[in-house]
Structure formats: structure tokens, C-alpha cells
Length: 281
Length: 132
Length: 146
Image 1 (tube, each protein chain N blue to C red):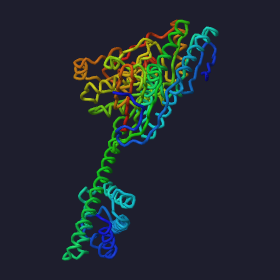
Image 2 (image 1 turned 90 degrees about the horizontal axis):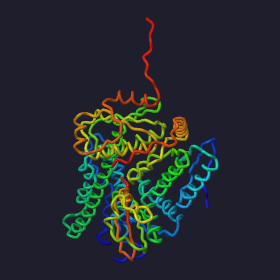
Image 3 (image 1 turned 120 degrees about the vertical axis):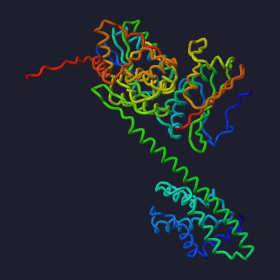
Image 4 (image 1 turned 180 degrees about the vertical axis):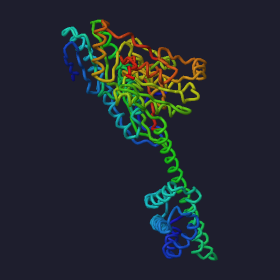
């Protein structure tokens, strides 16, 4: 879009401001479904309008140039808000594309010059739409990552079983990324609590592949370097078979069938004797 | 050149590394410790690396060497306070710190030393090798 | 391949970066400190910071003891989605005759101090090495944020 067309664009946007905004809102409001108030929508559309005028008022408009910084900010804000609230990508970009309909109504479609200009305006609005979609997609991705992290936190707690004994009950299928995070958290907990023993219980893990087994082994070695000992408990027959078949050496790492056995072992190693008390009566 | 201070706690020497060790300072520490063990007749050495956020192969090998030298001089070395990120990195690097006993902090390190001394064992059992 | 002075190469849009001379033990410490700043700036996790700084320490030491001194060129990089740290080590030393052998685990040269290349490689995400006997060595490593 050259400077002349841009100037006419700015003129059209400003001359028909109220009508444009009204049309624009009308085209978008039907899809709100209670996730956004009309007032909020009106304010957003006004913001986009204002920023757009600014973007096309300074010579050859470039959506990625400095004059369009405000426009990009407003579009990003619009899409991230909508992403968070649960609008679909189509609904989000529709809010931008609706401007094209409003613009078409504002021009004289019998005038060839204005029609040619309209094509240029529409192309620019299309760029805005794509930009909005990308911002939306980025926000959705980061939301998903955030949720995944929160899930990880909840599903793999590090618990204190006794003074100096921590346990990590692993549950569910472990992938490499998750195993890594859990292990880092265990090691940090060992340092924070100065616990010389950790029990990694894999009763709830249906299958272990080479990568996960390697992560567990690395964790045991890392814990040793720090001055703590790890015991692995809850190894099911299938996992024992897989481990042997994969040729993974557990060497001198202590393993126990159950978490209970592992606890007894660490208590003994810590110098405790377990004695059942005599009760009168 | 900067020197890492060595403290005397009865029959134990305590070293607390607070600075980013350059290779020459690490070697200097190795020499100083050997001298001090002989001079004081210390039976134990605690090296506190809580403040170290990086332990590379040179520092790692220096720690192993210090442990080896102490053993020859009838003293036990315990390295304490290794940070989790450092431990993870050392495992990835493939450094096993063989011959070095470790403990989570100075208190546990001293306990470990007391145990080793009362057991009559001058040095920890050879450390288990890195499992890959 | 000629080993030239470090300078902007085809990058993924990194900044100008910093060049550090490696001529003494203390320069190795300076490299660690500079890589730490860059790693923090690139939002690397603590473990990833530790890994890349340790790798840089190994490679800087190599540059010093095997390469006879050289330079490290350090910059933050970005590939659009993630940020990272890139460090390039260059020396005009004797070079490495058998790269494949040097990259094997447990490979050491005369002094008994291993080249540490295989270890450093495990710590980073991208690892490139060029070496011409008699001309020098260039090692480039990149660590990305997650």
C-alpha cells in the first residue's frame, strides 16, 4: 500500500468512524456467547481503530514497523485476552476480519478508484488477522505449557517419610521430560532438607523404557555425589524383565519390592531398631 | 594469588570454598592441605563446596587428588554441600569423583568422619563407579 | 578450512556478543562469569545454566592448555521461539589430528588431562568442532532454553 492509498485509508477510517465502529461491533457481537461484555468489545474495537489510524497515517504502512507498534500491541492484547477466556481461533480473528465488511459498506463500490483502494485496505486487514492469529496461538501454547507444569507439580510430590528419609512415589507413565523434572525436584529436596535417604517408588509406573531408566540411574548417582543414598522400590516383574532385557545395570543400587521394605531398610541403615512395645492389658 | 583458607577444628581440617576456583588456586589448595595435614596430624578433612555453583573436571579431579593425598597421609576427606545442579552436571560430564566421600552438609560430614575414625577405617570404601 | 578470527557468522539472529581473550587461568574464570550472565539473560533454567557454564569452562581450558591460548566469542541467540547462548572457542594451536578419537569417552592426551570434549558435548544442545592440525581449532556450542 503506497502513501496515497494509505492517506485515503486513514481518511475513510476517520470520516466514517462512528458508522464503522457500529458496523464492526454488529458483525462481531453475535459470537460473544457471554464470554465478553458488549462494552468490553466496543472498547477493544475502538482501540484497534485508533491504533490502525495511527499505523496508516505515516506514509507507507508496515504492520511490523514502528508506527504500527501500538496496533500490534492492541491486537496482541485482544487475542491473548480471547485465548485465555476460551474463544476459538476463528472467533478471535473474526473480530479483526469484520472490519473488512464495515469498510466495504463505507466506500462507494461503484467508484473504481475506491474499489481498488478497498482491495489494498482489505489486504492490510488480512495481515492484521494473521498477526492476531499468531498471537492467539502463542498464548494458547503458553497456557498449555503452564497447565502441564502445574499438573506435574501436583502429580509428583516429594514426601518426607521420616527424619532424613524422603520418598517420591512415581505414578503413571513417565516420559523423559517428566522424569527429568521429578528427579531435579527430588535432588533439590534432598539438599533443602539435608536428608541422606531417598526412596524412589515406581509401583505406580506401568512401564519403564531405557531413557527413563537412565534418568533414574543418573538421579541415584547424582544423589550419591551429593551425599545421599537412593533406594528404588516397587519394581514389578514386567519392569524387572524389561530392565534386564535392555541390559541396564543396576549394579549396587539397593532395590526393594515394596515401599514398606524400603522404609524399613533405611530406618535400619539410619541406626534405628524397630521394636514392638509391650502393652498392659 | 588468592588462597582458600584452611581452618583447624581439633583433628579435622575444614575448608570452605567461597570463590570461583581458577586452576592455579585449586592446585594451591591441594598443596596447602597436604602440608597442613602433616603439620597438624589431622585425621579428617572437610571440604565445603556449598558455595560452588560450578564444579568442572579440573576442580573435580583436584577433589579426587586431595582425597587420595589425604588417604596416603592417613586422613579421610569428605566433600560436603554439593548443589543438585552441580551433581546433575557432573553425572552428565561423566566424572565419578572416585575415592571421595560425600555428605550433604558439614554436620553430616563430621558424623561421617567420626564414624570412619571410630570404625578404625582411615578412608571410605572405594567409591562405586559411575553407572552409565 | 581456515580458522579465522571470531566474528559474526550466519547466526539465528543473535546480538553482537562479547569476545574474551583466553590467555591465563583467570581468563577461564572470566569466561565462566560471562557465560553465566548470558545464560541468565537467555532465561536458561538453573540446571541448564550450570551445564553450559561447565561446558564452557572445559572448552576454555582446552583452548588455553592445548590450543596455546585463543578467544571465546559469546552471544545470546534466538530462533524465534526459544532463546539460548552460543559460545565459540577459537585457537591457532596444534589442532586435533583425530577428531573421532578425541570425541570418544575417556580419551586423554599426554598430560593425563582429558580433552573433555565428549563430556562437554553431552552438556550442550548443539556442538560443532573444526580442527586442522597445524592451524588451529574452533569449537562452537549452543544451549537453548526449554
